[in-house]
Length: 89
Image (cartoon, rainbow, N blue to C red; front, side):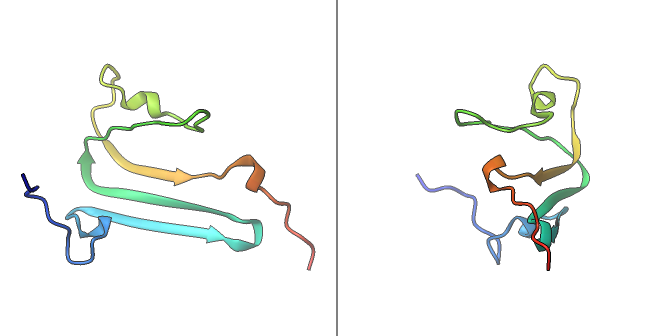
């Protein structure tokens, strides 16, 4: 049975009406952040996998939590072994 869902024209998350994505980075200190912003509050869920996930506030999305909707999702961070002190120029 085939799925009735089809990719958007660019097959990107921004093809979804009411969703905007922003990103900022600082290559000098090797950091960045991405924000997925909903035009109106949206229902959210999370699926955390792996042996040592680095999550923050994901428990707020559990079915028995008080959060009913979110305005945005922020994605940031890196493995601690990826962190490098900037070198002097």
